Length: 200
Length: 201
Image 1: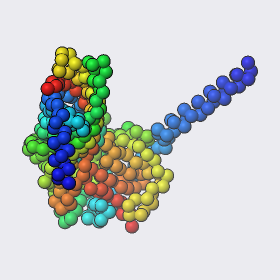
Image 2: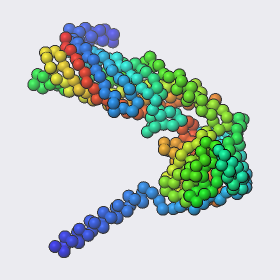
Image 3: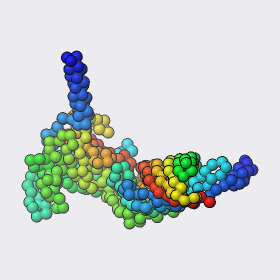
Image 4: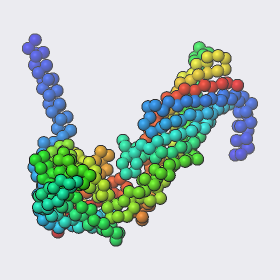
């Protein structure tokens, strides 16, 4: 009888162990607690099929006062992206503001406090909403699917503690960390189009 | 070579039997196929059984190049298809027949929604350019396999249920950012269950 109890204990332990393994495969416990926004200009290099075709000169301004749909907001962050590809240029502007649960997305059409531009803390399955595609300015919804202790972007520059988020199809991807904000945007819906942060 | 082919055909025709059919493919389980009726004929010769038909396909929008749904990219369209296949048949207790078949399906006479194409082409890239232009879709020929169970309700009249397996290939072509020619094939399965009535001459 004792022999059978031992066997049962071993099988039960193996089952618990295997269950633990499968949970670890589905998610991760790493988190990013905040994104550091400061007044700065940044340069993203844009490639199509690994060939450099343009740049995204990004300007971040903090402490902005602005009204959305008649509601005034202070301490807003203005993220302006001046995108040039093959000689054609356009600027896309995004406004966000820090609230308890993260950075909310602000616009005249969408100004509810529940619309997270970046949900904080960023953990497994956290939500992003905004113009995160490398080639279009439409707002897309992404969720966090991976964590990289070290991550090398397409320009060969290495970053630490990077979160990876995908859209529903897995074709639009974002790589982001606490110190550098967006490190790389990827869009594989058409030809592989990538924006990579150039920190040099 | 041509003489051999003519001899084979001549030999076959001596023992030919024809069985026209009308078939209803159940599209209720498909998220993109609205209608898919077909008619055709089974030609039984001394050498083989051949199935040739004409299908009408009415497909609705299910995913776009901008936003695929479950890997599908299909624009609202109608198509005609010509399935051609070889079949093997077994009869059981004179009334029940089982057939298995392999073949290829060829598509033609596509009518695609110009409004939907305009919507697809209206999206702008973040540099202000048209994201894609000259957008086209067309179905490539695909292989299919089918299994059919038939029952002879009255002499020469057979009612059959069948299942078809096939991988449809939507060939998508467009110009990306006014200068990159793109050609890609979007594949998805369409495996309808169908009901058909067949008469043996």
